[in-house]
Image 1: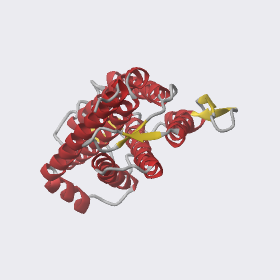
Image 2 (image 1 turned 45 degrees about the horizontal axis):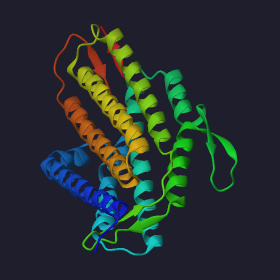
Image 3 (image 1 turned 180 degrees about the vertical axis):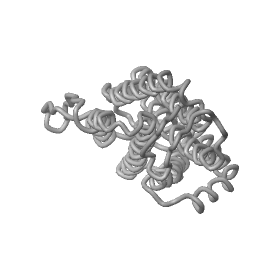
Amino acid sequence: MEYSTDDVAAAKSLQFATYIYTSTATFWTYDYVCSLHEEWTFLHRSNWSKMKGLYIVTRYLPFIVLITDLYMSFTPNQNQSKCRMLVNISSGFEMILAIFSAFFFILRTYALWNRNRILLVTLLGIFFVSSQFTHHTQASGRSIDQPFLVASVSIIVDTTVSATYATSPIPGITGCYQSSTSDRIFIPFLLFSVFGLGLMILTLLRAIHSWRRNPSHLYVVLVNHNIFYYACAFLFSTMNIFTSLLLQETYRTVLNSFQFLTLAIVAARMHIHLWQTSQHPRGSSGFVHIPLSDMSSVNVTA
């Protein structure tokens, strides 16, 4: 039996999704097993706080996302409603992961700037309130001014909920994919890349200003973590902007998920490393005080 070019392309994209989800799950499991001792040490010895709550959600939510993605990839499914439900569950958890991971580093940037409340209010204002974006709803056809975060979430939800799903007619190819596409899905990644780039610039400005006065190891680790995370977030978001515009829907979904899961793993591992560094500080001519219980301050003294 001969299959159309579209059927073959869809089958290849579903196989690609299965490979990526399986490799990501393998990497997450390997990372968790290798860091199990460090993880339990941190969970038992560190004080309960908002930052610890952020860590637990960021660390363990990928487990649910990966189970959902693997189930969706390996289980034959002809039910479009069930397929839509699984995609919506996965997308919802991925959005939560993205928000919590970003919050980690918003608080870290706030700490680097010596608890500058003006900066914190500005960052939260950009993230939640002040940066308006015009979002055109498919349901009503109306244009609505929305905040940066709300606009990003609205576009993702609107895209996944209104999408139609299909399965491959080729035997042995499991999973389902979005048969309809949206040209607006790149916008959330554009917004997140700009936001991450802004945070990286703030970190660099603070590092240049304070580096000579504060050469402590803990401060260096905090700055390096921030710059590395923001650079990864910017590169991933930039990649997903192009994949959202150029590739088939299944490839977009998989690479979007890969970004959220990878950044969540990086954020969790960096938090444990920073906590370990704070437990064993190295001597320096400066002093940095970073209470990791709430990441509330960085006091620099020459």
